[in-house]
Image (cartoon, rainbow, N blue to C red):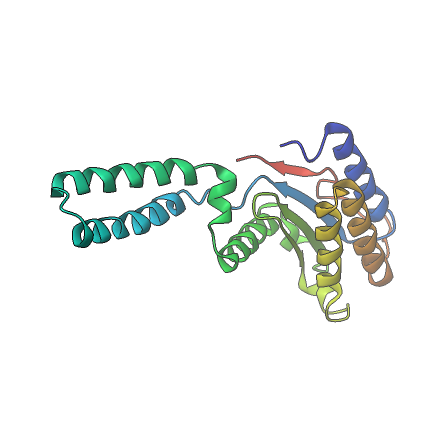
Length: 206
């Protein structure tokens, strides 16, 4: 995973620490290599296309059935090998499924990182999935109820645009600042307020 270097991780961690100085809320940033492996996709497309191969050969040639079967098998294996590359595999997945898998993985991370346990329900997750090229922001009910509709989607759109333009770190920093400002406006830091969740970027490989 080459999108974020160790130095970049430090910058993102510093941005989270700085944003949380002014709020009792919690921000967690997660970068995932992928939200699903999609290993069934190459088999599905290779199988569907290989099923079509015999029909023109049967109707328009005198080719023996054994040869037709062999051609069908070779086509299946060739298509399977071609579609097995991770980038090709992901490109064959419908957008709705990419969105659903990213949303599911983000929801899993929201729970795995204990964002649902924050006092006042003030946890906010920034989740980026590289293979799907998707960003999700999940806010707990305490802060979500206090911000205007469309606020989180605007942050998602800006971060997605920054990553697409090769400004991943700057995009993370801007998203973290925006979320920190929202949290600070409604949940200022309390006396002895504990920072219970990690401030560093969490990277999920595989």
